[in-house]
Length: 350
Image (cartoon, rainbow, N blue to C red; front, side, top):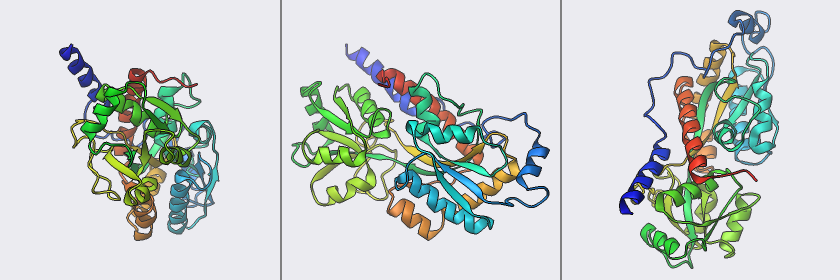
């Protein structure tokens, strides 16, 4: 029996590791090549001989205004406007877990004038959750750069009599199927973190989806659920005030906004990693000079103090700014990882 449990645990750790280590980046920035003539597309992007951009750029955000994805989009759009000398307009197109806006950009002209606030949800999680999505995350997009990486923190109410990961796991095992955890909905990062935690610890808790992070956190503070994997920044005030206790974070390194809370990997759940991201992508076939220009300007913006303050210090994200080739590999790795996790956890969209 013990050998079977060890084998199962090893299989789950493989989900986190996702396959092989990152390969040497491909020579092309896009995930796939396009059959569209590059010279013709470049002329379109340059506006009949004018240098790109010759007119305003639309930056599609597949989420509602005021949320984290919108904040990222508007922060980057402002910096691109200053750098490119043309207005970069944020166009919010929410719906279908980010799928509506993502699909719109997949079908847009590859001329550099429509780009996407790419998110790990629609680009790497949705293809694992749904039988069919109206875009191909590999063939339909040219990666520009990963802007951020964000993690979750496992939090419990201060009244729950556990102070360590081992004590928490022991409590869950003593009450199989009785403990509950909240999330922002099926397929959200905090839901996936909870499912991965169940698999790696051999525990069984009941998932309770809410309409958003604020509602789930309110339920946790009100005693309606027992724990959750919350985004770092919303949890910090409650951790500082002693209303919540942080057990561990889901990345392989500690959160800069919460350095006193160890990683779950540090605490013994070796290989536990679930982080998500925000990014900039363009339609496949966008000319390489345009992709490279956008990459340079976004990467430069991510090093600016006011951007660091807004996205990292206030937003709880780690800033990245990797190359198009490096980001393409991140997308491939995450597609494999989430496909394995969704299958192992038997997650189904309701």
